[in-house]
Amino acid sequence: QEIFSELKDREGGAVLAGDGRCDSPGHSAKYCTYTFLDVTSQKVIDFNVVSVSQVANSNQMEKKGFVDNLANIVANDIEVKLISTDRHTQIKKEMRVNHANIDHQFDPWHIAKSVSKKLSAASKKSGCSELAPWIPSIVNHLWWSAESCGKDPEVLKERWLSVIHHVTNRHEWPGNRHFHKCEHGRLTT
Figure 1 (cartoon, rainbow, N blue to C red):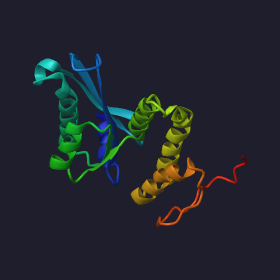
Figure 2: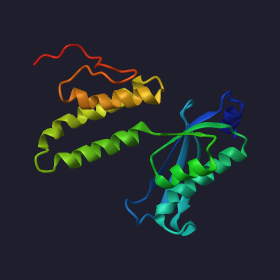
Figure 3: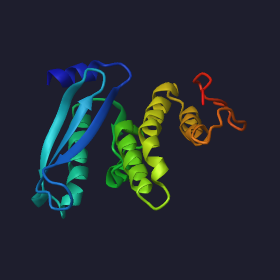
Figure 4: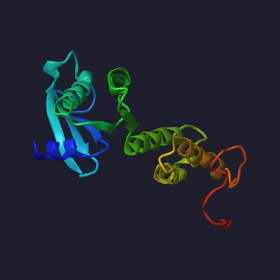
């Protein structure tokens, strides 16, 4: 209640991060804990445990945890300005359909993890092994792009896509509106 009181009084609304954690991987989980964190105070503001018996199948537990937690937060008169989650398809739809007034963004950690997995899988394909040493740098570039874009999605996209030029040893390029060259110094051979 003390944390909810702090959030009620916060001007501009709460910025939340949410994620679910199941007790086992795959589609055989029995329980899922869904947690919301207030990004500003770094405090857990709500969580619940969902049992597979409460939903049709284990794939629906994360959405139920999300929906129930958000309903509790809203029922306590907390204005939610932004929610950051993973890219769970059911939660994306829930936000789009029932909470369009709340800014829904994706957690960069989850995106970076997904990019890393996809690049790792690609590097194992025939003729693609030279990609493997680039993976940490590409993931770091994604983080840098997110941190340095000034919350502008167009700048984020241009910075992120600039990795394509960088890995081909092109460090200046035309055509973008905001970002036209790498920000590092001259590279030696």
